[in-house]
Length: 271
Length: 136
Image (cartoon, rainbow over all chains, first blue to last red; front, side):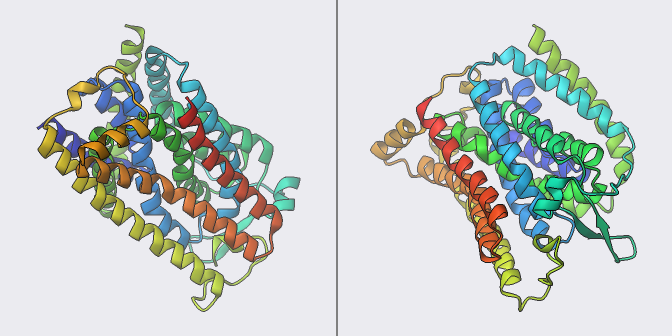
């Protein structure tokens, strides 16, 4: 019966994740570790696989829209993938208690970031690397017209993506909040473009460490199968519910839950 | 406008464009891949639940065994459920790798060598990361 409850919890995580624009990892890792007592390394590995599932499912839609900047995504994946490989190598040396502390701190950071209002920022000119790689683009504005945008501070963005990759492999999360923050604030991309491009990159980032975890034997089908199926199903439900639910209210409730869970994870790390 | 066309304003929105057709083919491939993964995982997981019952409680401590050993045992025992679940997981992890490969092919087709090199670099890192899992 515990397995069926895990499937249902994963459906809820996927639904909530889709409504709030998060991956399910932030929810499912605490559920597995705090409620099921699963060792955090197995939880992280299962969460990574579920990220690959949801991102691959959504990638088809991302390819159809005009918001995702595929050129920029491919370039930044150099940073996220190399970061994820470093994160995997680090994971063999980091103690479980430290992973709990790191996860709890990241949850707290995510809760604060979700409370802050995001403002659109734009850059007047391209960084030379953006010019050379033609990373700038256009996206559909409110009236449907194509709005051009430039890409600033590319090296800083690439460095931030490396950090996001490390966190993703260590904690089994998509690091979407971190990626979007770097693209918004450092690279000065429009919010819609940074969100869509971040979503597009998550599957590749997760796959970089998931493959290694898989061959090492950390990805157990007994955990990964219900989690992936649940999150995948939940994300489909969440995408349909998104427009009908009061997202602002849900977001505030979720921030409160996130804060409580983050303190529980930190307490477990300190125990 | 496809996002791959940014910078030069190629019109790839039209489905008659060969590159846009390739993008749409990637979409269909990913969707079909995810559906197949879901079938394999659901079938494998149901079979494992039927045979072994509840096993979540056994993962409270970290005692990992490399995948080749797990697969060898499943093959010896003829355990189709475990093999199906692992096949689903392997296919799932290979989907983003396939996506990067197809992106690299798109850039090559456009004769964008620098972007193609970056995509192949990501692809090489993804494939190389697998060997890290084998060695450790």
